Amino acid sequence: MGYVQDVLEQVKQACADQPEFVQAVTEILEAMEPVIAKHPEYEAAGILERFVEPERSLIFKVPWLDDNGKVQVNRGYRVQCNSAIGPYKGGIRFHPSVNLSVMKFLAIEQTLKNSLTGLPMGGGKGGSDFDPRGKSDNEVMKFCQSYITEAYRILGANTDVPAGDIGVGAREVGYFFGQFKRITNSFEGVFTGKGATFGGSLARPEATGYGVMYFAEEMLKAQNDSLQGKTIAASGYGNVGTFMIEKANQMGAKVVTIGDENGYVYDPDGISGEKLDFLKPLWTTYRRPAKDFADKFNLQWIPGKRPWEVSCDIAIPTATQNEVGKEDAERLIANGCKCVVEAANMPCSLEAVTLFQKNNVLFGPAKAANAGGVSVSGLEMSQNSMRYSWTFEEVDAKLKDIMVNIYKKSSEAAKEYGLEGNLVAGANIAGFLKVAEAMRAQGAV
Ligand code: GLU
Image 1 (tube, rainbow, N blue to C red):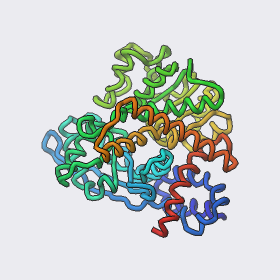
Image 2: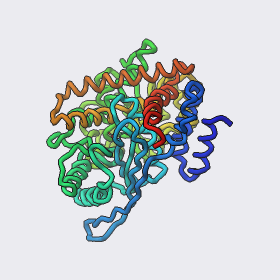
Image 3: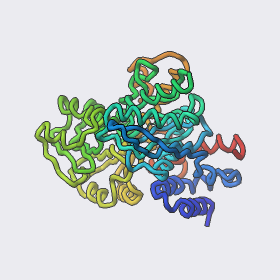
Image 4: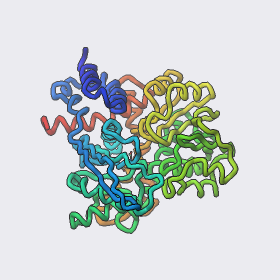
């Protein structure tokens, strides 16, 4: 076997109990064959086996008191994957599905995503199996404070800078920041996605969703097409989904579905106006189910199903990993879907991605398409360092530039390595090359 396959086999054996991590590594390493062929020095320097091993993983107890005065315990994580090109950077996820495998997959994806942004950020990810649904504000605050009371030891503006992810938004980041400031007696840019009154960047809430649509626009432009008049199917309606819908509307497209694990809402007219206003805080503030949206506006609710069965031009999964499987992909293709853009992290299974590629469905991988959020996080770090803040328009223009550039880098890398049109390979290669060069230059650390 060759070097790439050897490393993949080692990961499969050593991490057999970490299916999400193995899935992410498989996708990444499969894109590495032409890179290693062109750069034998990476094998000599052991870059791949070092790249797939997180630099550090902290697993810790998070005890907290619920509103009845009862002690609850959850498990907290922070995986510091790679710091070759900058301080560890990546969100914190609160969801019952969080475990070491999920954290490691998100952290390695984040490493390549952050590299693609062109900003100096390494990759990390954190989280807990804490379920924020049904928790009071007081309980969420106590939980966030307890999480930081442990995690603060390995965080810092020049060391590791977390942000939000599923179940963690501006409210939680505010509680993290307050507790970190209190423990360390320092006011530093150690989190991004902060409130605008204490160093948060304008356009950070919008950034991931807007960025997805800027990226989608580039994908279609390359085919002499545009978003005008396109019908989009989406799933999650949190921070990413709702701002993706807002930008899609501005670009002349319409989004006809949102959903959760219990079913989906079908709105053939497209979600806009007062419907979008209602939807925006439904998950991010109230953590309420998707059915509330159907009930409020008398829309069709399809229980127990995923949105990937409707007829659409573009599918944009906005919820979570592996929400689009093989059968969903088959159905989307049969129903005429021509483009899939991953807004969540790794929402399509490996089989689904292969099916899309075989059937000439344009495919935008997460680490490129959803990099807008962490890009504006990087801009938040810059603004904090300067003790200055840019206007919404300035940040949005920089975000757009970054997304256009990520598309360009990914499609050019695919072409250069003989895989023209394959953005999965292109994004992995372009993201990896910068990290690999930095690792090589820094020696065997
Ligand atoms: N959680 C987001 C992501 O998956 C943003 C991370 C950040 O801003 O650090 O990219």
